[in-house]
Length: 143
Image 1 (cartoon, one colour):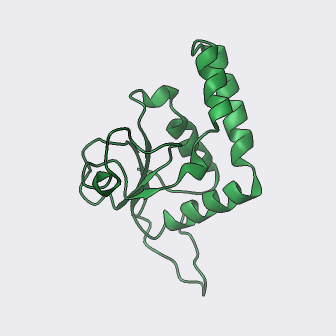
Image 2: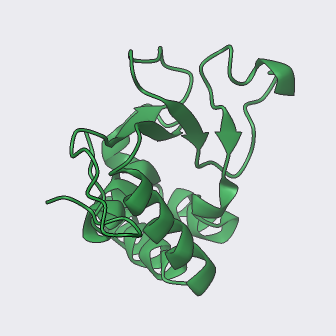
């Protein structure tokens, strides 16, 4: 479904968000890469974040809080702990300032390509899979 922009202009439906592992090789046409992590990569100079395929822009506001992550890790990363992390992270994403970011990213996904990511090796147990789902619920287009 096209996303109406201001003035009733309908934009190209081929644009979308790609969800990636930070540090992985970029895909042609991926666009701006946004790091949705609480901390920058260890041992990597700030000037090298983009050239080493981590991120172009850091947006820690879309990362789970340290408390949510600590609770998950202290529960030995069980399935029950993962469900709790998802519930708590979704609650954090309902805060007004984060809702505004989610709506912005959903709208942008209809006008430009960009990528969002985290460092986790397993996307199934990473907040980026939950974030992708939340963005879809906000009308975003994902690859």
